[in-house]
Amino acid sequence: MVLADLGSRLRGALSSVESGSETEIQSMIKDICNALLESDVNIKLVAKLRDNIKAKVKTLINDEESSTNKRKKLQKIVFDELCSLVDSHEEPPKPKKLSQQQQKSKTLRGKKQPRLLVSRMLLCLLVCKGLVKLHRVRS
Image (cartoon, rainbow, N blue to C red; front, side, top):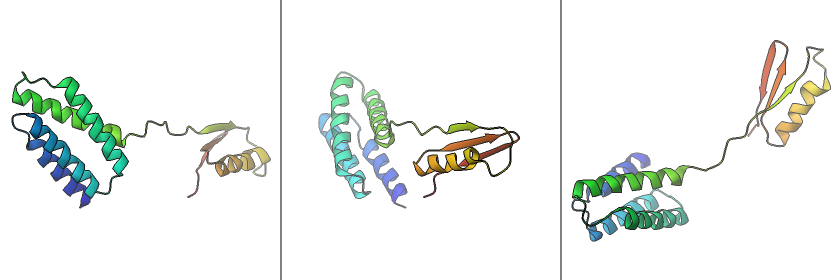
């Protein structure tokens, strides 16, 4: 139920902005940060999120805009920053392909080399004629 509570608190913080004034935006950022901290998010990540939101608000939101346009831009800024908080920016490991011809089941290359690669924390795909096995890292 932590995620449901976090979602309702984030929704409440975003809906608390009506006119888009500076004080409302600051209280919204404060409510979002408090909700994340109570949901056991790392304090360094929350501080980084707060700084990024403040920087984007200064550059993207003007005082002459209508309040509905400001609210939409605020929602977009917060959504983008929360997505970047969750994204690891790393590609998942790609499996290494080893191919061999169909031989006896006691071949060294077909069995021992994938196990060696798996022990080095790599994914390995063994392709034999008519047989496909995926060796995974065991945790």
